[in-house]
Image 1 (spheres, rainbow, N blue to C red):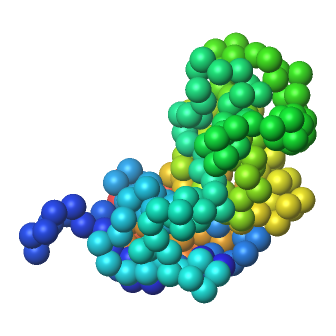
Image 2: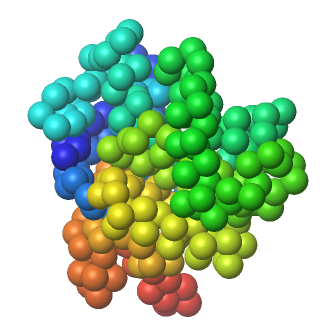
Length: 249
């Protein structure tokens, strides 16, 4: 379980310094597919970058399986990050390496080498995402949806407990988006990995997520099951995202 307690992220030391996150508290259960949604500037990406400690929160706690991880460094931090994989909007593949080498990269980063067993595991993961036949191809030879599937295979290489998806489908067409969302849902069901989906699209949340938190100006303004929030959105942000605001009123 991930417990986020009173998390704040400010940029600068002044009392009126901008707050990207303002007293955010959330619980994300093991095995959940959790949506974190909000409009541009709501703090979604900052929150996910704090979860994997690419950014350090100014205050508050991130407790993972009972351990406060916010102070980790060195070997402990690297070990924690292997448990928390990330999938980016821009895919993040290495253009000069083959698809297989991209999927093997976490093994190289963790151990300084890639073993035959690692390569076999990478091929199994490519098979899982339906791209084993593309192992020798380069990212430039793939469609956007295929590149994102390679990125998912790479994210799974070190058997993470959590996958963070930061606008992972926003650069894709609807058909590719549906393929990626179905793949993430199936991986969640087969492996039990917890998936955290950062998005501005209520359509994405509706298709894949079990629970959702709505951010606005760095604060959680609403959270609950997807069914409850969709049926009865209480916050203005959720109503806008669901397009239930009468713009002519």
